[in-house]
Length: 305
Image 1 (cartoon, rainbow, N blue to C red):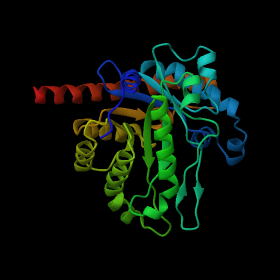
Image 2 (cartoon, helix red, strand yellow; image 1 turned 180 degrees about the vertical axis):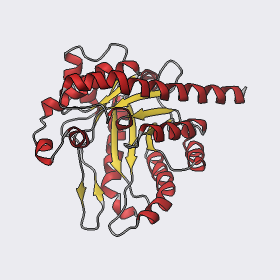
Image 3 (tube, rainbow, N blue to C red; image 1 turned 45 degrees about the horizontal axis):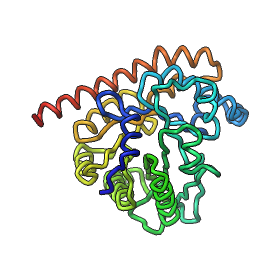
């Protein structure tokens, strides 16, 4: 496994809470956030980057300030949250490199895209503690992943040259004509195989979908060795995510990078409503997740003693 350098490890410490676990609020979504906020396709199309930036600033101020780190995009949110003093001095900042959406090949494969002009040096210039790259992988179809593996290889090498922390994320997806049951049955194996691809490319910190089973979580932890991995929420409801977090942490995950499970019921085109809901709904959800992580990690430490 590829170990973090001193500088990378320092960045990793900063995205973790006092207990050493990653606790990152993900708010780098653009298209998905528009869909949540809009009541109709016309309203969705009318949501500007500036409006998204205001929503992300509210998530940063009212929710991420209660966590150790926030993940934001360089299209709507950064550098404004830094320059305007919204980002607290003790809240770390990950900056997403991936563009919204994807291109689809004739075979139904997804090709990921990058935000133009955003590399490791630019992430540092924008005040980032580190970067985050997300690609789509369909690990059982090598021909599907050629472009996305090239993106990962390029980004990992770029951040290594700059000695800057990079969190690597992948998502998998169903193929045209694939039944829901077949995809669900394949899902744990797709996550495990995708994790192997990311590790073989030199990833040092991973952000992964909940792999579906306790055994799959344990397999990923064994595969990762010293490489820490965080579980993402993938937009599931909060109570479902709490259960997934507990299983993942009990089986070796090193933290949480969560977005929609926390704030999808809170954001609105009315900023006053958003701010109220973030405070009264999202923050208690975050506190519950933090409590679960703390309890599970304490149990692990006691068992190891």
